[in-house]
Amino acid sequence: MKDLCKIYIDRLKEDKTEILRQDVSSDFLAIQEKELRFTPTVFVHIEALIQDDLLILQLNAQATAIMPCAVCNTMTEHPLTVKNILITVPLEKITNSIYDCSEDLREALLLEIPITTECNRNCSERNNLKKFLNKEKLHHYPFKNLFMKKEN
Image (cartoon, rainbow, N blue to C red; front, side):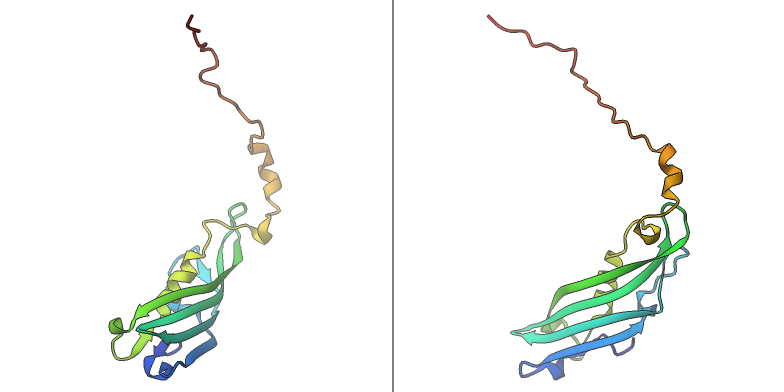
């Protein structure tokens, strides 16, 4: 991952667009959680160009998170997709004519992680929980006994 997300500004002169497509190690996500892991590879597609005094990046990525099912607690794969994230960076903020967008890519992928997931999007153990779920809708009308006085 050392050079994959590095955009070399000198290569983008003269209205050129740089396209990076590659499977990379998921190590750059730097997640050390017991209940959140990633499959070994992340597919990354980055397009970079310079417009006026801005570096414009378009990020796309596909990864798979492994996290426990919210119902049965077995580890479950959940696909993550980042599509068309646009990032603009002023050229004066880029030192050494190299911009590393790995942190931007990391943030975009981590924002796609759901709070919970289920096995196959519908866990088979969910049937065991039906008896605990109350299907009755309780209605509460706090002003039901109040009447408006009519003025003459």
